[in-house]
Length: 242
Image (cartoon, rainbow, N blue to C red; front, top):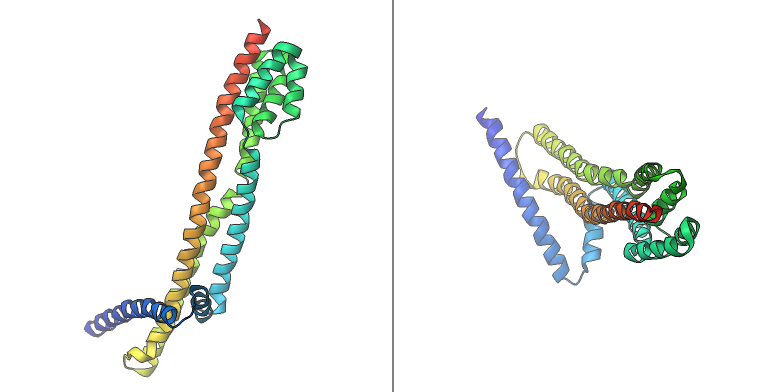
């Protein structure tokens, strides 16, 4: 039992020492004239193609989803105050059909919700309100489309990195068992390669998490705008009916 504890403690010291050595190596190579990108590329290759390739794939797919969502959400953002004023003026001057024409010529989920409510305005306020609520749910689903994939990549990237580290540690301990003694030079390289997978997995998760938080904040802002605009539309229709 004491021998096992001593072996684990020594291995832990190797892990900490190897992490410090990796950081020192980054600094030394940067001082030697290599750019950060070149050093990062070399460390990525040293980590091995198996897990590193999967982590890289998570990063690429996650960034693709994030960029697509950011473009979509920016296009979905509209000047709701201006739209509400235009719809109100159209209702006052040309009635429901004129207001629907304004919504048809305006992009974004708020204009689509307005159109659905105005389209059911002839059936009564209750019917218009139900249409607004139902179509608001549809638009919310469109805003949140593919966001679950982004959260999946954030979750599995560090997990894959940890798995690569664990497998590398197992290989290191197998070397110890085969040789019969504990040597820093014997297992330090294996542990360093194993830790690189964790580092790149965490980097991937951090990058994607930043994009994820921005997207969620953008969706919340648009949804709040949709809810506020929906209330304003019902009020406008109620005033128009009088």
